[in-house]
Length: 407
Image (cartoon, rainbow, N blue to C red):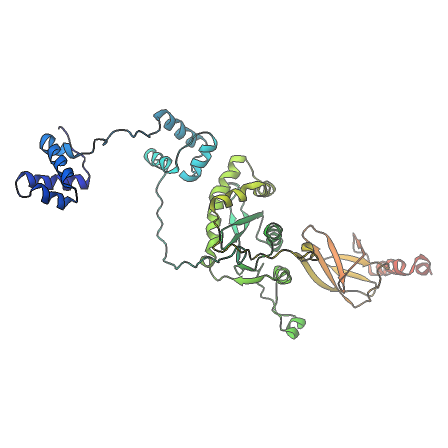
C-alpha cells in the first residue's frame, strides 16, 4: 500500500503482537491472552495480517462517511444560516435556534462543524479550586438575589441591570430589568416572586446599600435594640423573610452562574427580536423567556415539600413593599416631605393633633399615603409650596370653615 497508514494505538499494539506470532516468539493462544481477545478473534486477526499485512488490521470503516452523516448540502445550509443569523452563538444555543428554523441537528455535531470551519473555538478556563456548597433541599428554603450590570442591548448601548432571583434548591429563576440595582427594582422583583411562588423562607444577597445600611441607629432603635434596616430590609422583615448577607460573589454562586446564562441567551434573544428598551426586555421576560429557561435548566428539589408561605389574606403586599418615612404634623395640620406639602383634611376622624407622628408611605406605583395610628389619612397635596402665612390661612379655612377664616 502506497503512502502512510493511519492506525490507532490499539491497532499498532495488535500489529506488534502478531509480528511476534509470525516470528514464532508467541503462539496464538498466548497472543490472545496478551491482547485480551478470544482465540477465535485471534485466529481471524492473524489471518488478515498474514494476507494483507498491517493494512488488514485497520478498521474497514476508516475514512468512510458514516451512514448517519448529514448530507453535505444540509451542512452547507446550516453553516450559511449560522453565519448569517447566529454568528457568535454557542453550539448548544445555536442548535436550538437552528431547530426552530427547521434545521435539526445535535449540538455536538454543530460544534464539530464550527470547529472545522474555524467559526468556534474551545474555551478552557482554569479556576481556583473551591468546595461546592450543597443545594438546599426545599423549594423556597433559600432564594438568592443579585443584580447583573451588563450591556444587554448591545456594545454601543448603555448598561442596564438585570435583577435576578434564583431558588437555591431548584435553580428556578425570575428576573426584572431596570436601569440600576435600586430598592425599587429589587422590591418589584420580590413582588413578582411572591405573587408567583409565595413568600420564601430566606433571602441571600450581597452587601450593597439596598440591603445593608451603615447609618447609625435612631433613638427608638437604640431603646428597642433593633438593627438599623434599609427600606428593603424593613419590608422583608414584615414578611418574615430572613436576610442572609454574602461576603463574596462565590458565596452566591447559584445566581452568579445564572447571570452567565442570561448574559449569553437573553442578550442574543434581545438582538434577534430587535428589543433595545428596558420596557421591551421586561415584556419579553414576563411573556415566557424566564419560564423557557427554567424548563431547560431548573431541576427538581431533593424534597417535594415547598417552603414558600402563601401570602395571608389580610396582608396587602402593596402596603409592605413600599418606602416609609416618619414625619411630624405641623401646627397647621400639614406634613412636609421632600419638597412637597400635604394638607391633612378636617374630615379625618379622629383628627390627629399637631406634633403627632405620621408615616409617609410611597408605593411602587408612585402613590403616596399618610398613615397615623395604623389608619390612612385623607389629605390634599399642594402643587407649589405656598408662603407660610397663606398656608396657615388655607389650613384654617379647611379645618374651621370659610366664615371663621374670613373673621
